[in-house]
Length: 414
Image 1 (cartoon, rainbow, N blue to C red):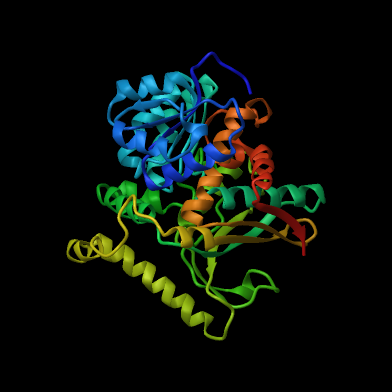
Image 2 (cartoon, rainbow, N blue to C red):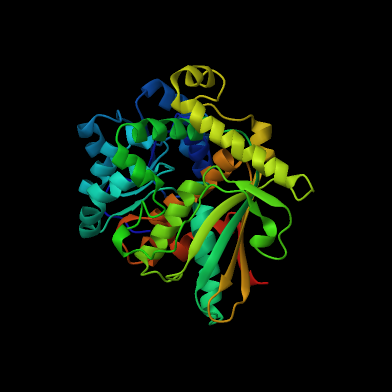
């Protein structure tokens, strides 16, 4: 760990929120001695209560007050630490000033966003300056989108090591169990609101390359549907049952495509990527998959229309709400990624798997280890700066750290 002369190594912004408290608890238990951590938010009372619940290791963690709209306070926060980890979303509402403050201060940054338009705005506003300042702005360091991004990363590495060519049609199949995230619902709600403001924003959000450095240089691979019901046999001969659309697939796919473009299309110029979700492999799987697709479509439509949105807002989980301790403990996710290679036509698969509710307990581990990668292993990270993805910013270092934290990350030839 290097010391840049700053007071702190890491500040958790939003430490009093549901995920923020889980992140703080994870770091209080696992961060090595000597890592200087602070807790930030807008309420002194709530921050003190969060700190007192963390035990003796966090007793001396400083408290920093900063409103998400207070540019001066955020600039001071960023100048005191080497890394900021923020859980305060929706990020399009509460994240822009903090990213700007970190770029200006030369402070690395990680978050949990799953918002296409926020990340696109972050790229356009800050990539060049962050790159010039040597800053890593790393969006989407939770369940969205570390398993997707690192899964394809290790899949490519295995194929490359075998001299099997490039990746072609690649599909992630998600299996998971956990609570419904109020934050994810609020992200969807906010994305709908932002897209309704401008037709150009709607077209941007719909583009499969909406997060790419330059969309005009991306290959024309025809229609790439990020919301589809898919027969498992069309993914790989060993995959059984029909698969439903994956709720975060429309975001994760764009992150993975950005990684490919930032790396000069090392996955392949004909790399096509999609994500689906398992609903079992019984004879009724096609019906279940179609039902999930209908529910997701109905949810988007319902949140787009004021009368139904009024009802849904009172039924769906609110931001800051989360599942019970039992649900968090018993939850899990497994992401299996299948591909066929260009040179040999060989079939490969990668797996990213972890215990704990995906959107909460597992996400705290993913975000915590991403932040610690920047704090403890900065000199071993890829030599890249700017607005990056988990794979391009943290790469093998994060893979190593997550394996050490109990996350399975593997790739094999089938």
